[in-house]
Amino acid sequence: MNQSSLKEEAIQLGRQAKAAARQLAPLASEEKNRALNLMADALEEQSDYLIAENKKDLDAARSAAISHAVLDRIALDPSRVQMMAKGLREVALLPDPVHEIVKMWRRPNGLQVGKMRIPLGVIGMIYEARPNVTADAAALCLKSGNAVILRGGSEAYFSNQAVGAVLKNACAATRVPQQAVQIVKSRDHALIQELLQLEDYIDLIIPRGGEELIRTVAANSRIPVIKHYKGVCHVYVDSDASLEMAERICINAKVQRPSVCNAMETLLVHEEIAPTFLPSIIAKYQAAGVEIRGCEKTCALVPGIKKASENDWTTEYLDLILSVRVVADMDVAIDHIERYGSEHTETIVTSNYRRAREFLDRVNSSAVMVNASTRFNDGGELGLGAEIGISTSKIHAFGPMGLEELTTTKFVVLGDGQIRE
Image (cartoon, rainbow, N blue to C red):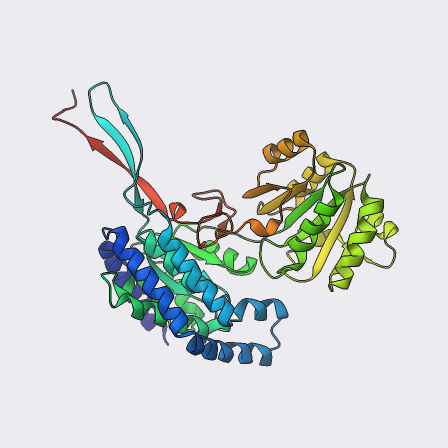
């Protein structure tokens, strides 16, 4: 397709989304919730169709020798389809933030001034793999009154088209406009560049995927971008930690699903407990297929493991690989996190209340945890329902982006005839 045709296609998507956003914004919660529940029902009813379309993507990915981590993100099975449907129903149950008055005060002249939540307008989502993102993003945008343009990765093309079609068709029986959820059909990467120029139609771009994708989008967009470059997440096991608890948390943070951004990539262990803790947990990691890359002290305590390079400390493996470092104390652990981390998720395991509070105060990642797995930095796990992504850029949101993060506020002023002197 030539550049002129691609530009026209992008503008058409933008116009349709903006018109749909105007129709969607004033809808009552009941109507939006009805659409979400119908969408969930439709996903479950057409599970076999979705899995069949997903198989096309999986077969192509295997033929292209795509990594196991990416295959895991692409894959759909009955359980994952049910989880998508469950996510939509959970969003339907959440309080609707739109039109909520979040603050109100009275001026000396009698004016009442307040702030009301309103939708952002049109969201552009550019993402890799994970067909569930199609459903999650559609649900959150719909409930928060935003239209959404979804451009998934080519590695999950058939899955995303199928999920999107099921969701759009479910809207037909409601007042939610079908164009409120649009799936980009073109596989041409040049169309993304055209979408990124549509500042008159799209209010926010959310890229979700690898660091290269996000940096490319941020560098080329004329529209504000929510950024999340990578998830280099840490667990620090303190000298006062329960080793049994620490082991459970550390195994879960790395092994339960290593291909996601909230999986632990670096384990930091206080030197006082390292001689006892590391040989035991590394043996368990190795039994689970985890490759360990350790600092000099770690290698001395557990012979035969690979020595970590400087590059390992900044790497988001998204795989069964773990960097391990022995540290002198919590200060050194925090210094390491500040130097090498990505402001995503950090955990301290300790029974020392003072150190736990200090860790919470000093570490400035999007989620900071005490005695819990990094895997909990997820919208669903934190009670937001589904999430549209995790922002590590602080503006305008930080951490998992749920319904409130997809709104902004406008000032509302209530008077009884006041004029400015």
